[in-house]
Image 1 (tube, rainbow, N blue to C red):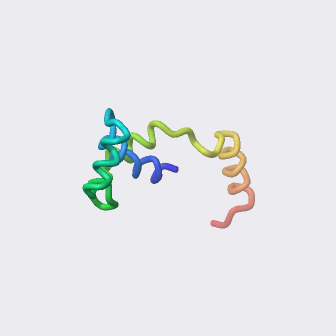
Image 2 (cartoon, helix red, strand yellow; image 1 turned 180 degrees about the horizontal axis):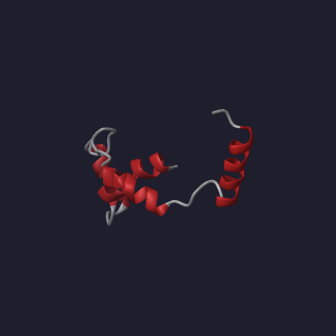
Image 3 (tube, helix red, strand yellow; image 1 turned 90 degrees about the vertical axis):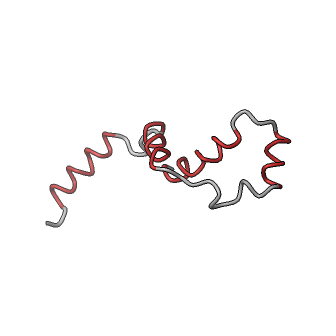
Length: 73
């Protein structure tokens, strides 16, 4: 989820405030191609700050307890 969110950030910046026809024009000009919109570290940091954890803290605690009891060392 983090990588997907971060990879969409450059696209969102590029089309922010544009009308649908302006977005189509950018696409037709080849300005929305993969590789044309580089993902930056700030995009990953923003994604980390905006997404909720996919595992609850209670599940994490249960896993750590299980690992302490049964995990390999």
